[in-house]
Image (cartoon, rainbow over all chains, first blue to last red; front, side, top):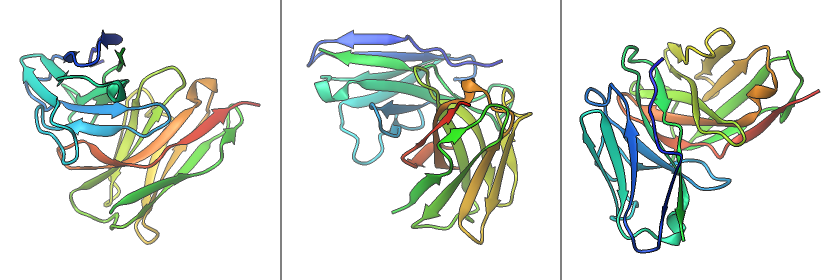
Length: 109
Length: 119
C-alpha cells in the first residue's frame, strides 16, 4: 500500500537550519501538509498546501515540494522547535484515504 | 473558535469494542465542506489515520482497519463517534478527533484521549 517516507530523526544545533524530507510517489499530484507534535500535545499544522504557513506559525517554518519529495525547513531552529514532525497527504490510488508519514524526531541541542 | 472534545472509556478489554465520541462546539458539524476524522497515536509510534465522515454520513476508512471500524455522525447532538471492534493490545493509543475542510488537512484537533486495551 502507499506510504510516505520520512527519516526517523534529524538533529541540529540551535540557530542552524533543520530540513525534514517526505517522499511519496503521489506527491506530484497531491499537496503535502506538515504537522508539529510536542510531547503530550495534539498535532499542530505548520505548513499546508506544500508551502503555505497558517497564521500564528513563525516565519522560520517553510515548505517546498519537488517531484516525489517534499521538504519542511526550519531556518534558525530553536530549542522550542524540538518535537515530532509528520507529513500528511492523500493516497495515490484512493483519493478518500489520508495518510501520515512515519514521523521525524527533531532534536535541537 | 471551533473546539473538539473526545470522551469515552479509558480502558477496554481485549476482543471488546472501543467506543469514543467527539463533541464539537463553537461551530456546526453540518458544514457542507467539512470532514470529521479520527486519528490515533500508539505509544512509541507515529500518527495513524483511522478514517473520516461527512455530515451526510459518507464515511471513509483506512484499509488496514476497515473491517473493524465504524464512524457515525449525530448532527442533532453536534457529535461524531468511533467504534472499533475486536480490539487487541495493538489498539492501545491516544485517540484524537479532528476536522478538515474538503481537499485540505486537519486544522482543528481535540486534546486526545488515551485508550488502553487490557484485561
